[in-house]
Image (tube, rainbow, N blue to C red):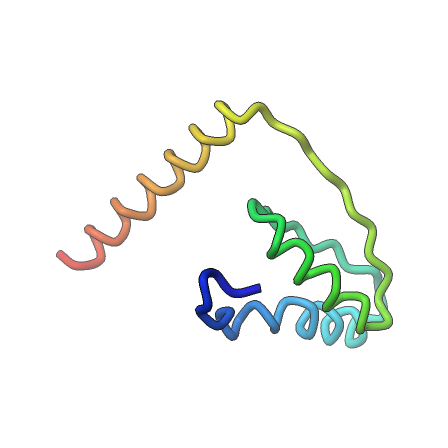
Amino acid sequence: MPRAGRPAAPWRELVPVVTEKIASFTGQHLIAVQTVLREDYWRELTQAFKRTPLGLFHVLLHVDSDVLAELIAVEAGKRIAEAGQART
């Protein structure tokens, strides 16, 4: 679902489609690891997967909110640093 009236990013629709294509091509089960931080995006993903022939097996890993915030901050810092290096 889009945020505040903005349309959803087009790549978001591709996750279930590409997952289905890869599983169909290989003929095997596929494990797709994805961190989803927003409930609305999780609902969007599960609804889209229901429109495919794939079975969805959901595993939830819980982490303390403080630890999660730290992990996100570290990852964001890495991306900012990488973007700065790419410009120089």
